[in-house]
Amino acid sequence: MKIIQLEVGNLGVNCYIVYCEQTRKAVIIDPGGDAAAIIGAVNQEGLQVEHIINTHGHADHIAANDAVKQATGATVLIHTEDADMLINKQLNLSAFMGPGFVCSPANRLLQDGENIECGTVQLQILHTPGHTPGGISLKTKDAVFSGDTLFAESVGRTDFPGGSYNQLVQSIQDKLMVLPDEMTVYPGHGPQTTIGWERKMNPFIR
Image (cartoon, rainbow, N blue to C red; front, top):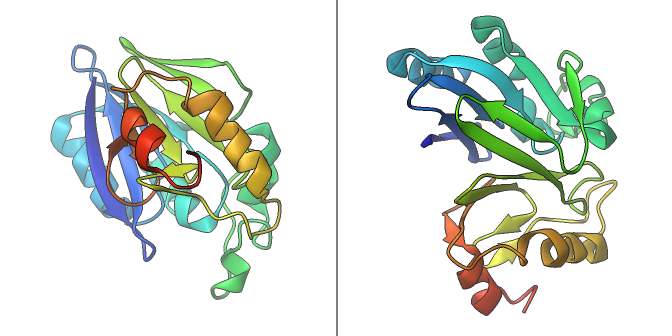
């Protein structure tokens, strides 16, 4: 498994292109802006993008969905509880940051425990609500993409509509802190970390 990380959009979202070296099949996690840069990275590596996966439905994580989908032919995947955020500018919060926008509806709705195959790479869906009702993390053999659930020594905001601090902390404890200490965490914003570091150093979950 190889990972290309791009910081995109005005709010500095971490967009991840995850691909299988043998088959060149890829998924794109959270294309939150700068579609040309994302598409350029895909083309430079000669990748076949099968899926766009949104860890949740906030505007800063979905803004380039349609442009990337049109360029690659990928299908859009999001948890069922955040699906309406793609097509509602109030729910995705873009209406509060300007004229707002909507995306095309998802092609597939995700549930906890599902597996997504990308060549030899397998990603397991972990439903980690709290930041949004349908927030997810994506677990591979050695890494977890945590969206806006878990950050380096911090956690996602819960003061937006549908957020719940208690639910967020419970999600982290039940779904992420049970993972091995050495597992790398790739968050939706900010630097990488590890489960072990967060277990010891994150003041929100110690």
